[in-house]
Length: 210
Image (cartoon, rainbow, N blue to C red; front, side):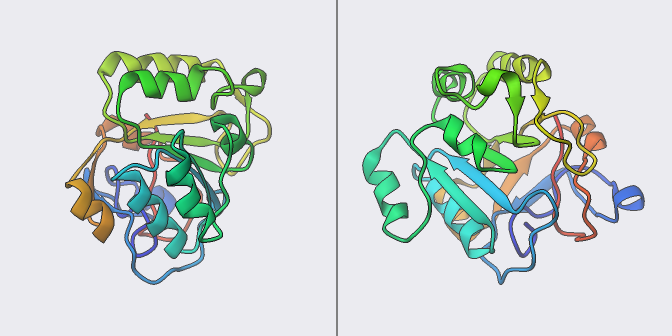
């Protein structure tokens, strides 16, 4: 975020929150770490393919407590061999995270991870993470469906300024080289950035709500 993960996402919100942002954003940098902002210390990452594996490792290098999940056992073993916690289901990821990021290959995978059995929106709709970021390749209807499902959920406990769990649809460009280098470009709707709710004075750590 910035030098420690997501860099400059969204639109200008600096006056209220002490942050600067841009619609096109670089992120998941492997630069030296700074302390994670409040309510974002623990990040769950689901989808450890060519893109997601690099994104998740950059978060680890940046100093975040990261846990991961993938249906591919070999992909998970590469992380567990390095001492990075792996979870058996999306629900387990949700239970141990402040923020969850998904990087999945299709709409069907996204629907299953969020709303399927042992999905992220389990636990009777009482969720631990306050923010969910989907950077998968999905159609607009899938994003709307997940956002609608999440709007019916509540937080187990209030985190900072967040009173309800939030969903951000944030596709990326730059491909595998950018994912590895930490120079991905995030495409975030302008209006989404108006609901940024991360209480931090770190001007390079930005998240926005869909």
